[in-house]
Amino acid sequence: MLNRGQHLPRDPDILVGMILERDAEIERLQALLKAANAQPYRQKSETSLAVLDGQARLDLGDEELIAEASLCDGDPEPVRSQRKASASSKPRRNIGALPDHLERVVEVIEPPSLDCACCHGRLHRIGEDESEALASRPATLYVLRTVRPKYACRACEAGIVQAKARPRLFDGGLATTAMISNVVVWRYAWYLPLHRQVQMLKGQGVRLDTSTLCGWVKRSAWWLKSLYDKLLSYIHSHCRVFVDETRMPVLRRDRKRTKVCQFWAHAVDDRPWNGPAYPAVAYVFAQGRGKGEIQSQLANYHGLLQVDAYKAYKSLTRPGRKAGSITLAYCLAHARRKFVDVYKKYKSDVARTVIERLAEIYAIEARIRGTSAEHRQAVRQATTKSLMAGLKTLLMDTLNDISAKDPVASAIKYTLGLWSGLTLFLDDGRLEVDSNTVERTMRGIALGRVNSLFAGSEGGAETWSILGSLLTTAKLNDVDPYTWLNDVLERLVSGEIKSTSLERCLPWNWKREHADMNRAIAA
Image (tube, rainbow, N blue to C red; front, side):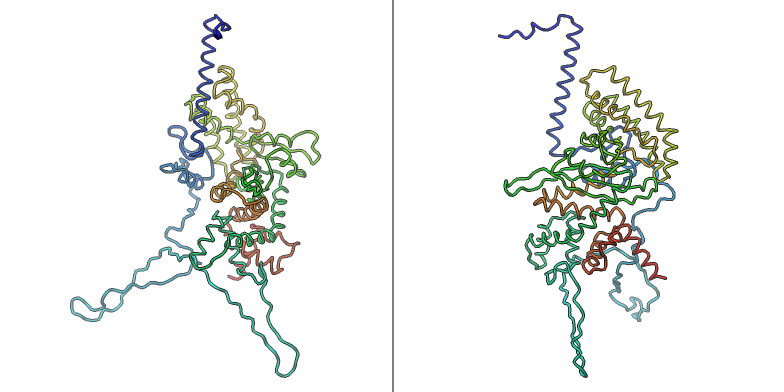
């Protein structure tokens, strides 16, 4: 039998150190195993619960989104923000005042009898009480019968006069453009799969194949492809872009299984500092997530990318790049997430201290959100810079005092390795501290992936990227996706919008144009 102890050192101090390292490694592996077993049943999140006692959410500026995520994750109730709303903030709810444009249906409730209970005389009306409540009708289908009368002159034979039929996505097809727009919006703005829509239509007596709806969706994407290209060009025209990626399973019919492809999300949003860029996102479908894909997508781009630490992005900064220089600003939320995971598993005091210090930085960001870039930079230089310097000192001192196999050591090395990119926001008020801007735009992709499981083909994934990009951008600009899509498709099909004026259809330009029209009509 092999004597395993013959090569062990005889020094007790060395043996104690070896045992401690072994125990730390066992504990780390057990935590990884536990996390791997739990992951299929519940997604990880450091924003849907209070990580530290008495400390609320660490994100900034997305109270409603975080509350919704908390409920979706199955938490007993969402964590409330400890930041007080400013006096000038307006509520986003319609409590006590429903929109004026909604149809008013009057329901009059009369007493059982209009005879006086005392003298039996006739009662007369002296006043009334009114109240309003939001009501709804189930979505109903109707048949649009188009009649085009023919006219001719009795006095001559000049010919027959008849109005032209309105063009539609499918000439002589079963559905109007409005119906097709509704299907597209249900699918890519509200994430309702096409086969469920088929079941809904069947309930109203309309029997269609899922392939029919697929044809409608594909034709819509064909009409909007040029507008999608305009959207992507608009995003790349700015010198600060957020980029992230997420998996997109695509069904391979030859093998009857899915292939894991990718959606790369490119986004801009200058609202945090009142900059010129309107909020926009474009999803780019790719076969994988290697450096070749992102290099081809950003072949002509030069500027600053705010990303996570995925290694494919680092290939964009190589010296021999012809298109121009790219600078990477890294995400502080990803660094924080490392320490959150360590604290959840091990209750590490170091991780707790780091989270608390990062919370101070995020609190500062919450206060300066919506101010000018110059003001944001000045505040960061005066307050945040010293906090980040103290945090770096803490991390370096801790790393020298702990074992290399300590779970918190990995989080510290990750953060220190990206330090130059993590601190770029200190010198530029236009930058954000994290890449949550683009991560929020990919929630729709995740919801659609949960409901639909996969894209039926590579062509279906391309369609998803086109329609998902445009409809998500419309929502980011507070534009109703159905109203926008139906109007744009109608004008594209009719020829009112030419290829040279496609910029008019981008959601922010469309919104401004229609606001001007409404003001002119009101005047």
